[in-house]
Amino acid sequence: MDVAGLMTWDDLNTLLTTQRLQPPRMRLHRGGPPLHVDDYTESVTTRRHTVWRRLQPAELHARLADGASLVLDSVDEMHRPIARLAEDIERMLRTHVQANLYASWTGTEGFGVHWDDHDTLVVQLDGSKHWRLYGTTRPYPLYRDIAQPDQPPEEPVADLVLHAGDVLYVPRGFWHAVAADQGARSLHVTCGLRTHTPTDLVAWVCEQLLVHEVWRRDLPRLDSPAEQAEVLRVLRKLLAEQLDDPLMLARYTRAMDSLAPGRMVPSLPYVGPVPADGDLRVRLTTARAVLEVGDDAVTLSAAGSVFEFAPGAEVALRPLVDGKTVALATLAAAAGLDVTVVAGLVQELVTGQVAVVGSMP
Image 1 (spheres, one colour):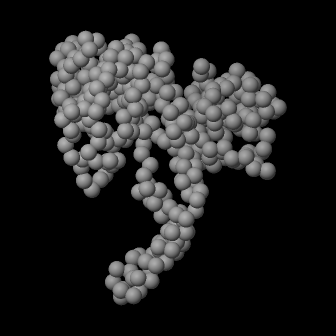
Image 2 (cartoon, helix red, strand yellow):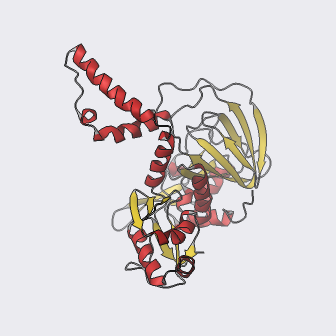
Image 3 (spheres, one colour):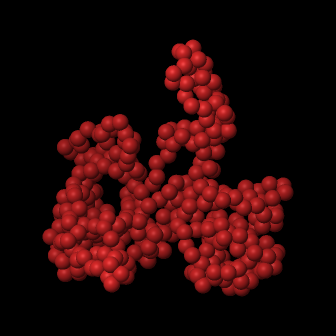
């Protein structure tokens, strides 16, 4: 994979310098638990009596040289190239992605042998990282589960080294240990994928069933066994009817896509109506918008909102749904519309918090 431009050490230095990254957003780990925040930051109280933590570079360097790993959560919210990577994965796999950044310098493991409750795609950005994968002792464990996995096997099932540009997939529940023990520093990003389980599906189906009065009633906990059995029969019938739909998983996926909020971005300085400026560029803030084309209208569902446009708007909306950043003039020309009309369409999307305009690349 070409990782050029995704994230550099200079980019990381800039984030650490310009952002107030309060723990646990930014933290250090060595062998498992996080280091105490006083080990590498100092407390600062402003004149307005707010308290924040100021990074101490010399102390940070000392902790990292002594084996700590630096972790920066949700770096996709702070660094546009990583956000684009996360959005591309979201568009392909149809689920939310959170990207965390990890930097380390020694053979000391930041977390020890552990497992994650979500699938992960690992992209090595710089240097090299030693991964030991031990397999799973409880298939598909969950964050909220009724049991924890047994202890990991003593011997790994895979022992490998990632170099810049390498990509590794780690299924949830796979015990693993990671260290930069190849004589080189390491910088990598992990893209965690939100799980979608039968529990999630049934919870969503139950919400759809709220249209039925019986699904909203109190449970007949104090009624006779016969009356309770009758209520359960009705509930079971309604639930079974929903699950018998062969398109149920497709409906669930479209619903989750249409609700995904994406990464909200303001459109400053354009706080009023979007100007009819052909050079102004627009993109969607969510990678999972759903575009449905009917005979009489085009419907865009995104970030929990639904927008309805005339059929001719499809040509202007399609590149945005595909993840492109496009100038208003380009959209207008493709759709055969005036730039003023396209600016009005885009204004609806900006107001609905599903699009952003500016001079973006």
